[in-house]
Image 1 (cartoon, one colour):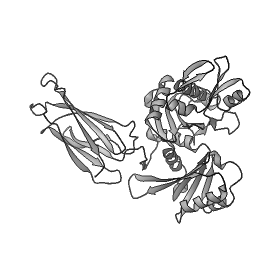
Image 2 (cartoon, helix red, strand yellow):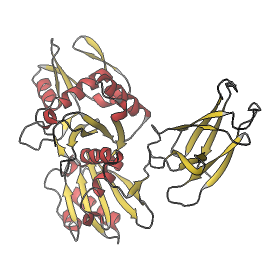
Image 3 (cartoon, one colour):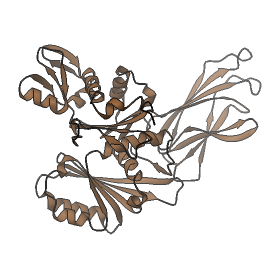
Image 4 (tube, one colour):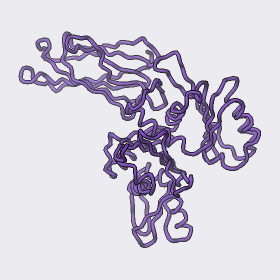
Length: 413
């Protein structure tokens, strides 16, 4: 395939470090970008530095080095400063941390090697430790400044990246349970992936446990965590990520890990998983799984419509989408009473709960002469706000300008 084919970029970013991977359909797996050609130098410190008295910027390890030799002034904690939309006073000038984050991303995209042959960006998938409104605002600001279409932006958390990565591997690697241990800094997190093979699509859940800081007796404590996490369950594969696993300290724990299962150690799982996530979300691969994470909608929401004399369901909201940026909209012509039914369904259930939404004080008109706009926007992972607006029917029935808002909740269903 030509280099002009769109690329999927996965960026795993945190306050500590950033990892960048690229994926195209002609590749067996995503490639992770190294800042040093020919080396596996994947982890880039999330820092920026400005050369003293000049408009020259450095990022990552080079920024740290230039600041150490007093050639540049370092911006530490760049990610958190940008999230908080803080100002940064640097070398006698004021900058917004968000503008500095744009410079950091520009530097990322300018790394020689694979980036030069990337071609057009098909999707930019940002992986973060936790999704928040501040994260959404920051990343939308960055892509706007970089003149990247906001429709190409996708934001997911590390748990979801693990889900995409683990299930994109060989089937024998997820025949049974799969575990991830994240030891970033001094904090240890375990994540066990469960697969319900009785549902279609298969419902994937994650059991996540934060084991706190581990600074001493690492081998012994990790061995205990492994035993507690595994219990009597069968595991096909285990993934270890984070700089806490650096060094040759795993003895007893590694022996327990490797009994009857594949074990993988690396620092680019999340960025690769982000690439797979963008590719799969675009429908480029058959995907018989659904994952409902902390930030994902826990309900399907649909209405019944008559289309060309055929009764069918129209989906407004899909379970599994991020509630931060999901929305549904349609226009319908009212047939009958000033009300309509919405169908609420849990993804793991075949049963649907019905709610009737009444359009109080809707002007009386002849049947089928009222057009309505229905807009659905989630306000949490289990609650959806539905706004219905009276559009009238052209010159026959002018719009009344009225609108009705209802909140649909999964609670109690």
